[in-house]
Image (cartoon, rainbow, N blue to C red; front, side, top):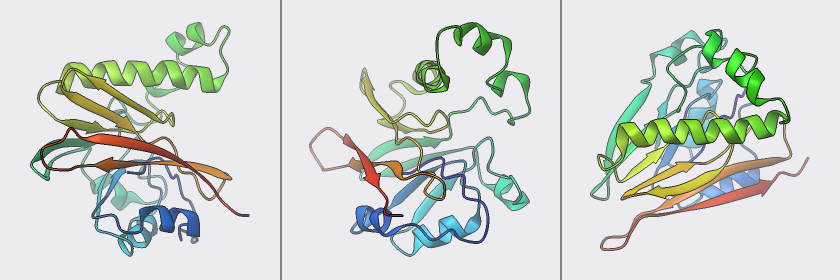
Length: 194
């Protein structure tokens, strides 16, 4: 699983560490804020890709807006929801902005990473209300904070951000589905060579 690559420009080729991490995967779930169709094509060389759009998915690439906001999948007999996790608003909507009044209040003693952790909790709570007991797993992004939580019978996974064009560390997650055993997710942090 991968989210929030925010790739701009012509170089969408994923770095070797990312390719190696996904090697042998049956499927890649892409939880929004892609940035370029080239990212989906490059990941598709490794394994089939199922993607949703995010709140910034159409930046410079209008056809990205044609991706669905949410997909409900059945994989290995398990119900999986793939979504970006934003509130369905564009980045220009006041409630989606970090400088919106509730965020300013929270940011009193928090840096941006602290605010994102709090936001991850809000997104998780909203998704739990919507999908708990209706899905075996919910995969989301948006906050850039890697997390795995099990609330009741439902597993919630945010692979974190994978902005491989601008960062030296990226985050992804692996979802392990085996018949007769509970699903489990593994968070991975990959160091990219410069």
